[in-house]
Image (cartoon, rainbow, N blue to C red; front, side):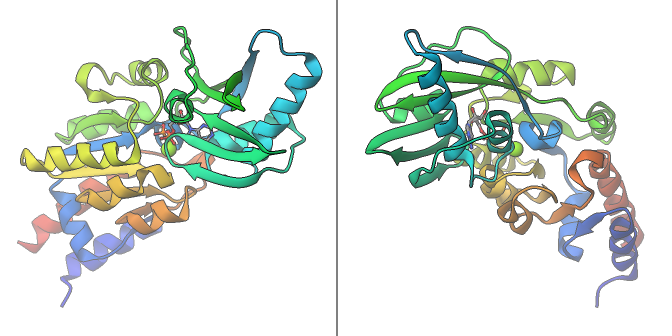
Amino acid sequence: AVPAAVTVAIGRAAQRGTLIKGGEALERLARVDVIGLDKTGTLTVGEPRIVGVRFADGISEAEGQRFLEIAAGLEARVNHPLARAVVRYVGGSVDIDDVAVEPGMGVSGSVGGLRVVLGNDAMLAEAGVRVAEPGARATLVHLAVDGKHVLTLQAEDVVRDSAALALGELRGLGVAVHMLTGDRVEAAASVAGELGIVGDAVHAGLLPAGKMEFIRAMQGAGHRVAMAGDGTNDAAALAQADAGFAIGSGTDLAREAGDIVLMSPSGSLALTAIPDAIRLARRAVRTMK
Ligand code: ADP
Ligand code: MG
């Protein structure tokens, strides 16, 4: 039988919008001493805005507009905060064939027989295109058309109001805080710095497998590890974690992979739900003994 303390704790968490998927998840949660947090959509609100566009040399205004619409066409069916930002920013879009999403990197397709690739530098590098990215702190999304870099969009997202408090409480509970992101190191450092995450606790440029490997390595070193994330790119890490917190407004895959789902609407989600859940779990486990 499930101990009463567990049922009570799960019920109490549910009242606050934190869905814990069973007693075992609660018990694993009580023992967590490390947490990895995704950046985009987890530590940040996940509603980035495009704050600038840079076109490659020699691109006319008409070409530039067409390239922006290609970018929006690529993102039109992608479920990712950056995809929504690009679609919102551009307005119109061009139909794209053979759309393929690469979680943690970007999206590609073809239009009029030309290959079009949108995403970070790793995504473009895979298509044989090199991009120079001088120092900007923004998240960068590049577009290559027919093997040539044609434009770069700069996106900025804001840190959640509750993030600093939540991280302070986690540290107070003896939980070491790490940021895990697929974004470039400059953008990662900007958000991390705001939250007092420094040095080797900032992990940037990670592919989905890299996030999972971080969790596994920490477990191998004897830690009990939580993960919090919202995206398809976080699903493997959420599944590997001893306790996976999925942001409820994120992707279906993240919700399925998580042990705990934070159900509040994205805009009003308080990340303090994470330390709250850990405290609740520890109390319940103590009561059982
Ligand atoms: P995070 O780990 O911060 O949630 P992701 O792993 O989802 O970020 O993405 C890492 C990087 O890959 C982004 O910063 C962006 O440059 C690029 N990227 C990922 N998905 C997309 C997309 N749909 N469109 C454009 N760029 C993308
Ligand atoms: Mg994310």
